[in-house]
Amino acid sequence: MPRPRKQVTRSFSACWTCRRRRVKCSGAGLPCKQCKKCRLECEGYSIQLVWVDQKTGTYPPFSRRSMDFEQTWRGWPSFSDDHLQRLIEEMDSVDLPIADHSLPLSPFTVFHSTKQADPSILDRPTAKKPDLNLQDFASSTDSSQSESPPTPYIEAFCSLLRPLTPTIYDCLSSSRDEATIFHHYVTWIAPIMIPVDSTNNPWKSVYPSTALQDSSPASRALYHAIIAQSAFNLANLYKENRQIHHQKQSVALEHYGASLRELSQTLSCTKEAEYNACAATLYTLMISEGQARDSVAWRSHFHGAGSFVTQFVRQKPWAQSTHSWVISQSIALSFEISQTGNAKPHNRSPITEILFEGVALRRNFGYTIGASCDVLRIISSTRLFMERIAHGDVPENLWIIVQSYIAELLPENDAQCAIDLDIPERENIVKLLPRTEQFRFLDCLHLRLFRTAALIYIYQAILKVPPRGVSKYVRSVLLDAMTFIHIRGGAISMWPVFIAATEATDEADQQIVEHWLAVSSQLGIPNRLVAGTVIRQIWHDRAQEALAKGVEPDQVVLDWKAVQQRLGVDLLLL
Image (cartoon, rainbow, N blue to C red):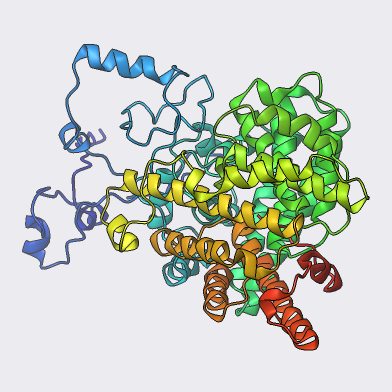
């Protein structure tokens, strides 16, 4: 007669050493009584998260941890039944105040709502934004070359993906390398795609969730495009390590090709339900070409996006869904900003006609590049006037219109921000503020930075004012940029600083530009390095022309687009 098996009561409160030894643990103290008795190193009770195999649902043994109720909710306030009901109802509300950083996070924000939340409603600071510090980054990414991502990767991944739908945990590729590259996209690329990285960052939520929402060719195309963009960035960050650089570049090219193949299957017969994924793919491929690969081919993706968008003139999906609006405004913003650097005049395109007028109706239009709707309209109108003038068509009321634009952009007429941006020792003071107040300050600072750069753009593009006439505005943009970088870490829009840098003639201003370029060069975005080449060439050409004419450099008007064209460069100023 077989002996009955001894019944064992399993516990998840044992220390890691006792779990591995399969012995009973006291579950208290460090070291625990069992480890102390056996003179062993007690590994403690900390939570250790691990990757779960997508197909089998299994995970390595001795890895799962659980906490009892009291530990899980320690430090959280208790809610009454009425309060809980109000919080649940708020999850489905779409009428919450826009961009209100003071709103507390609801305990139910971790759950997926059937409605797509307005990104401005989610505009609350993340618990901790990864600092843009290459030393820290290098130490974390070195471990990505191992067989599986380490525990800090997983914990950070779970934290940063809170706004995503639950499908992200189920749909990630079974490849650990791809999961690591996807993680790099969310934790490194997403924060530098937007000036102020709060929870309204669509590259942490809208783009990843759209890529992982189903297995359609459109979603797969976006997934591959995201992996390609992330792998290109990693290749650039590891440029000094030839082995890793070539390996990541190979992965990036493989997924880039896969994205194009998947996209070609769906573009000719795209359904409205696939609009988000297709539009986001075209945008991501454009960013990969223009930023990560330093290619001039990125404009071809813009032309593709224009043709694609015209298919949906009647449906106007950007007016029906928040995700569609976020993606569509990215395309519209990118077009308007990129056209300011186009040396060949173009008339108003279908993208501008269809998208800009439609997506700009929301008051938070432009938040993904840190600009306001009014300023972006002025930039767009300035560019169109410049193109008309280039064709010999000068409007009779041009001077009146330009004067109204200048008056609107002048710093003293900025009534949008109630925060004092010019307080003494502002950097040190702002760093002491609560995180929500820092976010408000940075939002306002970046808006002002864009406004001042738009003012320089008008003087530069239409009035042909020499650098001497805009020197105070150039200094203002550069000082604001430095304050922004020192407080935040470097994720600043390229357009306003570049516009100011092209008019910088003072040595002190040029040193600030060099500092900005040095910070930007650490982000793994080659077009920032190319921007530095263009800027320095402009400074050199202006100095040479000033010497030839016997005048000061700040009296020389120079078309930076002509310099860019002569260098064979087409900068994506995002």
